[in-house]
Length: 295
Image 1: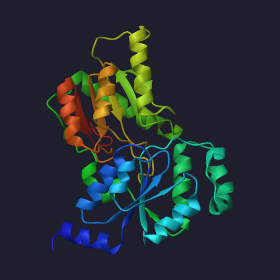
Image 2: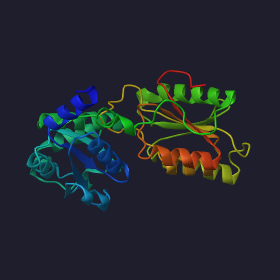
Image 3: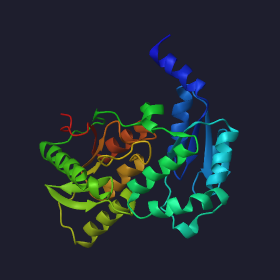
């Protein structure tokens, strides 16, 4: 038996993988990748967030914040390992759809909200563990869905672009202790924008508006979007994600290319993203953590 076959058998022995689904296409892409690896899945979608496309798979629906029902549904399908994928806006405590289990853990949740996203998410992982489940990383169960290392399209970064990539990656590492965000746009060792609560897409819209209004004067095509997990981030949840839409955002913001951390960034359809980058004339690079960009 090959190592891949052995892993597939081991995954099947652990039962289905529970995929807790937020918004976007990423839960579907992960489900397909896990199924290709030979492990069954059960998708639990949050009303108002998850796509109806999850109904092509074994699935259930629940409200965000109804933790007791989520636990019941996972146990119903004999799920032990779970991942959380897809966008969910950080809700206010009063927006939760509370059930009795959520009410019991509400004091813990209130404490978790007194901090950044990493503080909140690491606390959620511990609560999940306390109820008998194991949170796993997307990179572990579906490694083929993460961005590989290297120049991924037709266009290559210049020496100036590579310097911007190193600068941007260093910036993100330096910001890690402040739990700020997972992306930045830089040009010529100048910080153009840093991701905050608005997310990467919102940051790119802000950058495009600054350029259009003349508040930010740059050549027609300049700068790099750099995206990577935060240093010390628990990679079992909230890995950065990119796709063809990221290319569109980079073009609208007038950037020359995109550099993301290889193995630590999710991409639902790498071929589509590479095709979009090639068509737009920008570069796409997967970089190793703490390493110089590939040449």
